[in-house]
Image (tube, rainbow, N blue to C red; front, top):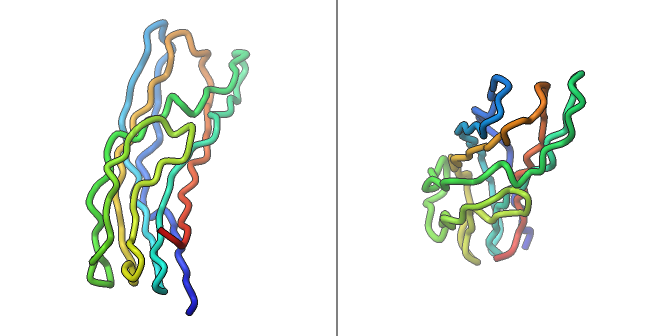
Length: 144
């Protein structure tokens, strides 16, 4: 049969404003995404960030995505489907590499689910003022 999985961001609170400082600065935020799956092979969802690209006049450079950390993975909320076999991984860590945050076991996962993720960012002291933007990719793939 046909196996599909797709994901899209529903809400993000990831817009931070920092004053210039010689001390590290920290902030938290959240990202909620929705995944839809069908078929019988199961699926998984992973998250990763690209470097924060600098724009401005202060001569700043890109910030590595390791400054953005996944700090929590909420339990999945079923919008449709019974939730059987759909599990939050509890994985946390730097988003400079893909982190699997939700899985559906083979034979499970039909339906639509939402998950809220907690993130934090550390801006190193002495970072030049300007705008830093990153793309966070939420990837859904079929298979265990």
